[in-house]
Amino acid sequence: MTPFLEMTGISKTFPGVKALDHVDLQLRAGEVHVLAGENGAGKSTLMKIMTGVLRADPGGVIEVEGEPVTIKDPVHARALGISIIYQELAVVNNLTVAENVFLAREPLGPSGLIDRRRMNAETRAVLSELGVEIDPEAMVGTLSIGQRQLIEIARAISYRSKLIIMDEPTASLSHHESATLLRMVRKLAGQGIGIVFISHKLEEIFEIADRVTVLRDGRTVDTRPADGMTRDLLVRLMVDRDLDQLFGHHRSHATDEVLMSVRGLSEKRANDEGVHISDVSFDLRRGEVLGFFGLVGAGRTEVMEMIFGSRPYLGEISISGRSVRIASPSDAIESGIGFVTEDRQSLGLVLGMTVRENFSLTHLSEYCSFDFVNRRRETSACEAYIKTLGIKTPSPEQKVLNLSGGNQQKVVLAKWAARRPRILIVDEPTRGIDIGAKAEVHALLNRLAEEGMSIIVVSSDLPEVLAISDRVIVLKEGRISGELSREEATQEGVMLAATG
Image 1 (tube, rainbow, N blue to C red):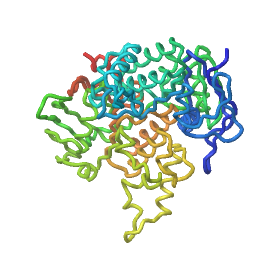
Image 2 (cartoon, rainbow, N blue to C red):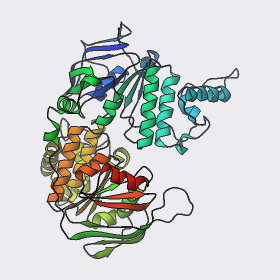
Image 3 (cartoon, helix red, strand yellow):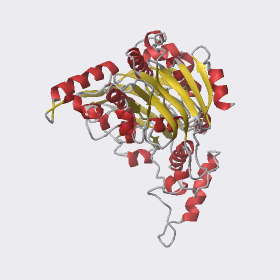
């Protein structure tokens, strides 16, 4: 069977970095082909070459339906039948669904004006083809993340794509939305559309894949049918280590000392929209890793934003027995609280600055003498965290914008860990990063707890919460619906508290 797209001997070199080294990849029509590998393995670079964003080094060959091609740009890629849906969604919130689907190629009527009736009808037809009921005239900003993801798929279908690349498509979705998306992927494959599916979620890979290709350090390690792959083998291929080597046994470092006490934390709003946080109370002990879990919309992030001062609250927060009023993030930082936000690109990093500059943003004064920055000390500290967390960057002077999503996440963690707050809140600490990087993040959090820091881990990844937490608090509709010790916290028990 002739592959729809075949890449042979693809290499790509950036200054100081060999991102791809003679990579081979075959993609078939009607197949879900998972591309797996650590952050920095070369997946994104390969996809950018496939979609015309980047040009490969001379010597490699790309064939589409058996014919050699040079993919000039994304427009040319779409003309060849290749579309991509990035992890960071490319929708315009203040436009309608139909305007997003036909963005920059709106159908025109005889008068030369946009034919909105036709545009809405064609959008409705594409959505119907996907089995989705969304009003073409709805504003995209009013839709859920999952629905916006479906709009991206509808746009790709409207191009009559033969191959759709999906980069971490479920990273920001709830369990229900993820299940809906995976059913959609299977339906598209059944219609003869090839799917390249990039994911770090092992359960998801084995649920959806027909074949799996693993990249490591810019090279193709292996390609084989999914039913010939096991979890242990896949992890070993990706990171050259076994699962047991990645995740050691949990050790609690929690003491009996209550470092932070939260009582009656609530949020009042002028209207009834959104989640209402109501009467949230808990204690956080020194050296404890406290997990927070809840389904999408349960109020996990909102509670953390209150504690960090970026959202107004009612109730009382005490640190080391002393009541504090946190009206802003600067108040929280002054009180010894750090916050690794889940929105790393908008709120966690300055993308145009270097790794070094981002790293020292939270504690720049440590490297200053008489208003001058000691660049050598700053760089040395940054390099230590680059090594500890395995941040893949040519140097501390690389712009964060040019790092993969997982490595950007590590930079956010590093900048807060280096400040040494007494309390560190990490919201979705491993979203969109590979299993090897996840193990490194867990090891860092465990080490910080061992050194006496108190950690709050907020995650929609239930296995992660169970693996790393000393205790788990479950939220449902803005209230605490369960508090479980490590021994009590099973997947069934936590999900019962989250849903019941």
